[in-house]
Image (cartoon, rainbow, N blue to C red; front, side):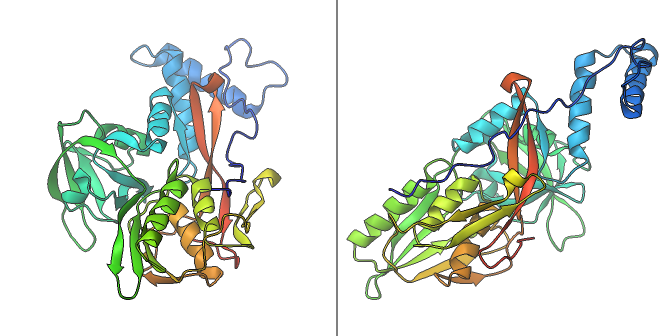
Length: 350
């Protein structure tokens, strides 16, 4: 392809010691902060007074999760199980319903259903709130816990309560879990042979998305296509760097996206290069409420450079970048919002 020159900036920037439990007899020593003393006091009261015995590992996990949960909906503490799930997701194969969710106003909210998955076929829509899982309310449930409950062995069923936009009461939906295999590019073909227009749906950004996109356009070129419709509707995003690579296929120069954060190392401009750019075919990009994150980066870059006509409804508005910080020798991790991204014209997507 010749265009893969970027380094994904969201690799760990530093090692952070998040939390230390102090023994009661140590907590009074000089040098320990007031906050540290209070934490040690809480730990010791729980250890000696709580009605049931609680091991330090449980308290440690709860403290880590609690700190990150006070932040935005996209930051999260990843225990070993959650970390492994995240790795599986980016490979494009996992067991579950086929929905991308976030935490909005304390409720699990669907960003978008993934096409041709059980959730999509059950009629789940972007903006739906999942208010119950197997009869248990999801109000104030962590995102990781909700995802864990929704996933399961392929072939098993899960009952969820769904509150759709405009509805006063939730309705019950029974969905059979399946092995979710997500291909980034779907429904490739010529939609108007006379006008030489090709169409493809780009449904997610994961490993090899740009390669799939370039190959799909190449196949349609061989069939005579000289203009393309790129459908980003219900694309929840995915890997940040893949959206940049994809935009670079269509841009010869200029800024694709910039990021800004508190740490100066998060302040980056990602530039297009002429090498490997596709011919300047006319482009139309389709978007909707389910278009989020990395797909907004692609649409924004093509729109600001006047490289494509963007058509559709208002997108989701997830204009933040999450970095993964490894903890405990890589056994755990923290997904932390470290920057906001801006389109070439300086727009923040939110």
